[in-house]
Amino acid sequence: MFKKNTKPYSQTTSTVIDELDNFQKKLHMTSIEALVLMDIGVLPKDDAAKQKALLTHELSHAIENILNGMTAQEAIDKMLGDEQEED
Image 1 (cartoon, one colour):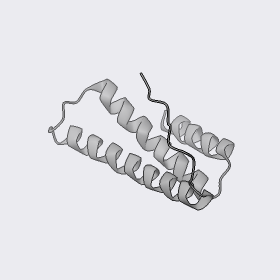
Image 2 (cartoon, rainbow, N blue to C red):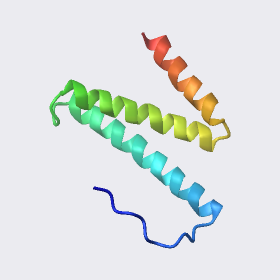
Image 3 (cartoon, rainbow, N blue to C red):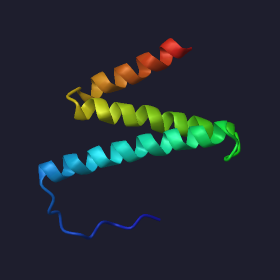
Image 4 (cartoon, helix red, strand yellow):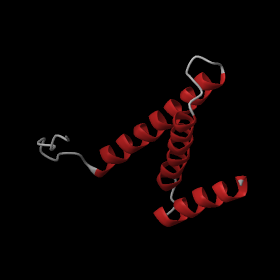
């Protein structure tokens, strides 16, 4: 299952924000890479994998919006609003 984090908490708020910023960038790039590799045929075009990559991409943008000053609710509303516009 999951390992419990036994490392003592020693991060400052600034370090946590930096780590979240790095996490957001990695999520974004990983999702874009997966979508591109599926489009060019390097990865199989599996519908579930594509949906996962698209969701990861949307979440990366929501995290970026929060890091840029939106509230969590505003970021969710924007993400869901963008999704509804695509339908």
